[in-house]
Length: 166
Image (cartoon, rainbow, N blue to C red; front, side, top):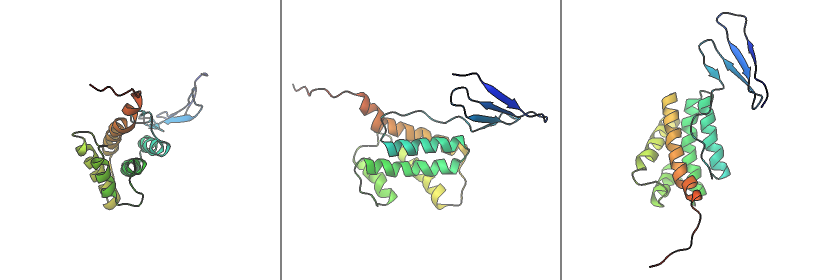
């Protein structure tokens, strides 16, 4: 890691630009402390297929850029990609993808409410003239992360063992 470098405006109140010592990219802080780009929201999730990981991280980046409606729509699209990656046929309706995930056991017990909430918020963002809030986006990313952990990360942590019969 290198040394941190920063710049500040001469105007009052003062704004700052810091260069990240790790990645070398700039970050702007306005006088109220608002950061652009902001930090990524949500947990890292391991063992994801490439397309699924790309969409999940895109949703996280949308929050970082204060693009909350886009984050909600991306979480909706993420469910479709998960279903297809797990064997659903491409070109189905959104509800068919949701039913596929539930019917094949990819939704954890008592987790149908998570998926239904993502579906409803995604539908609001997609079909209504409504702007989604940061809280909406963060909530859906949190639910999506739990679903991704259940479907991909946790199963990948278990090493296959021989079947024991009694």
